[in-house]
Image (cartoon, rainbow, N blue to C red):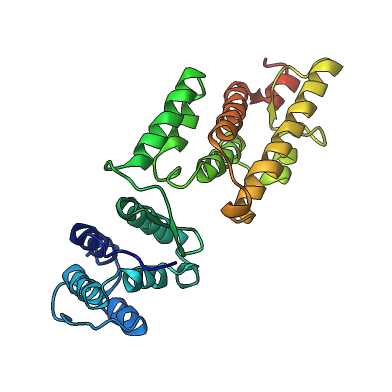
Length: 275
């Protein structure tokens, strides 16, 4: 990146409050270590964490006449390798930092690197984006469980995580209804196949046509996990971009799956003649 204009002092303060948060921010030791590694003078080490960090970063950008070393510090603090064992903290903190950086036209990617982005002029363009997705899905009358995955923290970059979490919810619902603990294609086979009496059935399973419907829906579930969940779980987001229309279509399909699962019955009751 070229020379980055000095950040507004309010932006610096907000970033410092996130990274130096008393409850879930960096520790004082971590702040000192990171400042040292980034060659930023720790000019106020005796102050509270966020004020200490704010003063150090503000002083550095004033001395430099630019915000490049401030961004370098944020990138260093949010290096994915540093937080490999705490992805929830990484994602949550990056989300908060990006909401602030959006006012400077910047964003930290999942690789921990800064990139230019459209400059925000409102408090939360991410919230607006999430609201737009939710409105479209409500117009489609999707299953209520799907709306859960339109939270702004899930769509702050794109719709990748909303789709990922929604597909995960399908497996979770199957486990809740069956008591099984497997996942993916194995879970589908365990829950619906005819190797033994299925755990769940989508119909009465009396005719060949009904059995074929059960098998067809099994294939749909396996395709859902194989195409979307497994891909999003293992592929970097940059190589698996999901646009709004794709997200709407995928989430609508997941909605259909949820509705069918809600109506699925215990297959053993069919075979015992209780239904």
